[in-house]
Amino acid sequence: MYTWISETGRVIEQVRIVPKGDFSRAHGRIVSAAHPEHQAFTLEYQVELGSDLAPCRVQLTVSTEEYERTIDLVRDDEGSWLLDDPSDTRSRVGGAGVVDVDVTYSVFFASVISRRLGLHSQPGSVEERVLRVDSLTLDVSEDTVTFSSDDEKVHGITSTAATSATVDSDGFIIDVTGLSRRV
Image (spheres, rainbow, N blue to C red):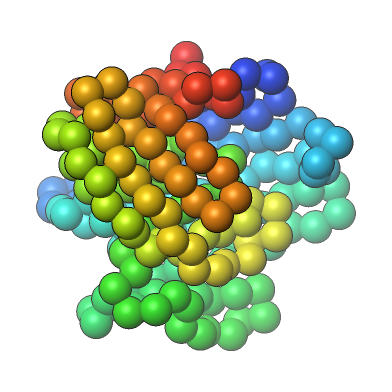
């Protein structure tokens, strides 16, 4: 079980990961107090990770004072992502070759990407296309992230932010400088 708290104390995330043969299941929750940039929300997620540490299925439910929404992302046998949204519509999202899912406010999803790419075990750099999910709206879009690592940290650069994280020997984030830390 892993737990992270934001430096402001307004956001907490906890996830339980259970190995199941050749894959793992993760069940987690992000709870955020109201903030000038967003309303209070809870995001619950269930994730299936394959033997290659890539997500195969991601189910997300967000709850606010006004609404509750659920989406289900499933990677098919051809490697394409399918999105089931609240209107019971199934559509393809992301382009060919997109493997990872990144969820705003989630340290767990960032850890999954870092682990899958092996950035915790050897220095390197890679540009990766990801499905970005907005925690509040559950809107899904494709984004490009540049990941790199050195002997001390894993770094991520997106179109909107740049972060650096200290990770443990298994690739799980210990802290994201100035943003959150594991407790």
